[in-house]
Amino acid sequence: MARNRNKKLMPARAVTPQQAQRLQRQVQQSLKLAVRHHAAGRLAKAEGLYNQVLQADPDNPDALHLLGVVAHQEGDNERAVALISQALEHRPEFADAHSNLGNALRELGRMEEALASYYRAIALMPDLAEAHNNVGTALKALGRPEDSLENYHMAVALRPDYAEAYNNYGDALQELRRLEEALACYQRAIALRPTYAEAYNNMGSALRELGRLEDAIESYQQALKLDPEDPSTQANLAGLYISKLDDPGLAIAESNKGLTLLRRSTFGAACDDAAVATLMKTGMPYFRLKHDVQQADYLAAQGHAVAGLDTFRQAGRALLDRSESAAEGVDAASPTLRPTRDEAAAMLPYLQAGHEIDLPEIAGGCLNCETEWKEVETRYLESKNEIIHVDNLLSPAALAAFQTFSLASKVWLKDYPNKYLGAFSDRGFISPLHFQLARELQEMMPRVFGGHPLGRFWAFKYDATLGKGINVHADFALVNLNFWITPDEYNLDPESGGLVVYDVPSPRNWHFKAYNENKDAIYQFLKDNKADSVSVPHRCNRAVLFNSAYFHETDEIHFAEGYESRRINITYLFGKR
Image (cartoon, rainbow, N blue to C red; front, side):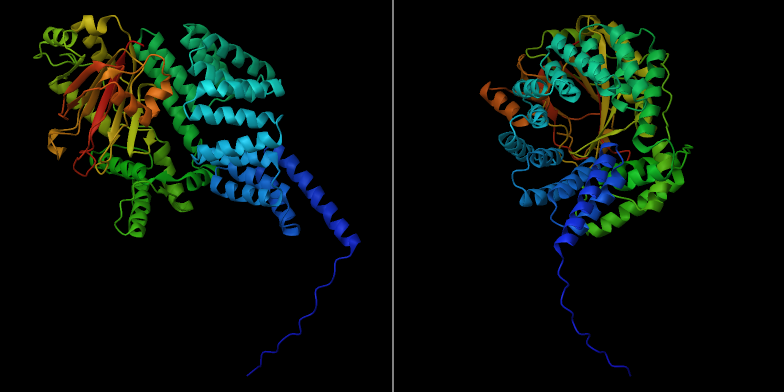
């Protein structure tokens, strides 16, 4: 049996000054080459070279900082924070690193920490335009667009060629309804960067708000030429057609065209290596995948033919089962599930596939013919606080059609942290029947709806284990119609599951984000104004009609587990505040 022999440890050889200088030159050359690749967008090559630098010089603050920037650009912001923080340990006065640390913190939702990093960068380098721009972006995200203006102004004053800051400046001005000033900022951004698709998209929105619809269409179309698969521009253009055109069929065609492009842009043009890698990296929220697997099971049971249906069901169920097993029975509401390469390849064809049920107009009428609509109209107009509910809104045929459409159509494209999904009129939740409902409401109740054009309409679908749905908010229309289509047998608490409406309107001087996202400020406002609330329990085919300026929120939800038992509400907005 051979014996292990201890090797004699040799002392490390000292590095000569010449060797140290040669090593430092190599580090600097590799760093310069990495920066060139980074600037050209070749992130993988840049990352490899930054790692080579760190192998030779583990504490190099430039390599640590820029490797963190790569991680931020690739969406790994936790790693970005760790790397940039490490760089700052070795160079605390590194202003650019403080600014980029703020960017990663902002993406993680740590806004106050992000602002502290930006302010530190400005204290170290007062003329760092990027940091001033970043402060503005953080303040705007916190619902403080007025406060952000000074920072954007400073950013463009320091760097007159800063196209991104002009675009952001325009966004803040547009949110404050200073539309002409916003338009000037977007035009300046485009003059500086003629290929700036985002600025064209934002300029289109400002033009639309100014009533210059043809110019808005032209701006959106230019944005799509520059970035054909941008979902925001697709949705904006489709929404403009919906509001502008008298032909609902053309609006539907535009919207469904945008929906197809949206799917393609989300997951890639085909099930190739890039698309698989994207899905592996981004993953899906547990509740999102749970819904999609349930819907796929429903489609299979109903005999629908959808590309990739069976392989998606198998791979999706395996991923859910693996997650549930790891959670040991704990509610897996928030985790992001990341598939293996084989699972992602199996899931993508179905995720990319479109499938919408046709909803033609109903010859017998969409509204329930047994409801006295003139009485409903009078009741609303004479109500003390413009809040009423109406049972038996839809005809039996229309109710069944909306239920089938909502169960079978793959239009639930947006997911929200509170475990609910959204489908929107400019992203596939649209049909002749949808327009028939709006038209009949305007005909039957002309004093309420007749003078107000249909705006957006949407639907939300909830997880049975939710408990609470949409937070308190107000809408940007004049009249709000909300109705439910889930059968009552699935509601485990018949006295709740509906809507709570407060009878104090949102202040006119509040901007959109303030009355839609700042929950604490809203509750304080309601308390200060001694607001009363009306709670309307869920009933299938029940509608709530109210002034859109009123704050409202989803009531507590307790529905049975299962796909067909998911609570679904549909909202129509008429007119504009």
